Every structure is written in C-alpha cells, then in structure tokens.
Length: 258
Image (cartoon, rainbow, N blue to C red; front, side):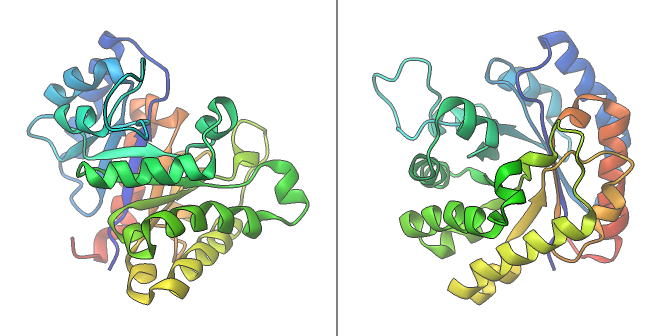
C-alpha cells in the first residue's frame, strides 16, 4: 500500500535563522511519527544548513526547482547534480508558480522531471488548473495535457519513480476551497490516466494534494482513497500547523505498513 507523504514547500520565505528555528521546532514532535514520510523543500541558499539540521532525523530534504540542463553557462540555474550534492532526495518540478510566473512550459517541465531522475532525485510533479479552466470544465483536459507531456518524454513508468502533486490553482490564495470530494475526483482521474498506460504504476504512484492544506482540513483530505498526502505551502512555515498536518497523515496511515 502507498505510504502517505507530507512535503513542505517553504517557497521564497525565511532567513537562515528562522529556517533553522523551524526545523528545530518540528523535529521533536515528528520523531515518533513513523507511519508516513516527511520532507521540507527549502530555498536554495539554505540547503546545506538545513541538511545539517535534519541529519539523523526521518525528515528528508528537497529543492524547489532545478534546471533542465545538467551544467554549463546557465547563470543563476541549479542543476540536479548540485541538489544531490546538497543532500536532497526530492525536488519540485512544474509548480504552478514556475509555470505562470517564470514560463515553465509542459515540455520544459518534462525535461526537468527527466533530469531529476537522472541525478537520483525524486521529482514531485505538480499539475493543476486555474480558476477559468475549472469553471469552463477543462480540469481533466489541462491535467491530462500536463501529465502526457512527461509521459511522452520519459515514458509512463518514469512516473512510478516520482510523485505527482495536484494543485488546484484556483483554490490557492483565492478564498475558494476545494472539498475533499473535489480533490478525490481529480486524484482518481490522475491515477486512472497513469493506469491506462501502466496499471501497476498507476496503482502505486503517490498523488499529493496541494490546494491550501491546513491542520483543519488535512485529516478529511488524507482520508480520501486516492489522496496520498500533501504538498504544503504556507502552513509548512508554521511549526504547529505543519506538525498537525503530519499527525493527520500519521493517523490515516496507522494501518499502512511502511
């Protein structure tokens, strides 16, 4: 069975001091929670410091993006090799903010997914629709297009070496909220889409929910049959909130063998 994963995405927030303090606050209460997996995806300048702070814990390190190139004259970019050298296990690719603000196309995201796998990283592939697409009934079309770009480039089996995160962009910072049933419906669609290409991969791939997960709604979301945890934004910056979300994953996963 699939083990729940809760991954915090700190985005461009914090200082070295506040980042260390956050890790120091979450590690003790997370230590006994062994029925789920946990990670934090931190800003690039703090990777090595947070790697040291996490040493000996069960919380793993992740990056928030990587280059589609391995090395060379790409000023300001971060390669998969560099992330691996910093101790990262995970890296986010195709986050909605990278797609909308920095122009990451579906094809670029597919290249980044491939590079992550090449360097031994677990890519967290983000897919999801904006409000206009949701209201026009295009959710499945958009999510299918984003998934298919990776499948065309890397093959469907490659998805089994990564994680998928569904981000309903319309439910992030808009005041609108996706219900657990709405989340489940898209997660089931994603799983079915992958399973159409490879049944075992579709059954095994973890699909996280990334639409404003908080302590108050985590348990209901994680109880959905195709929701395998969360990609947590703002709530991951508040120690008590993040720990509560992780406890919700632990509770749901108590009957799952790790």
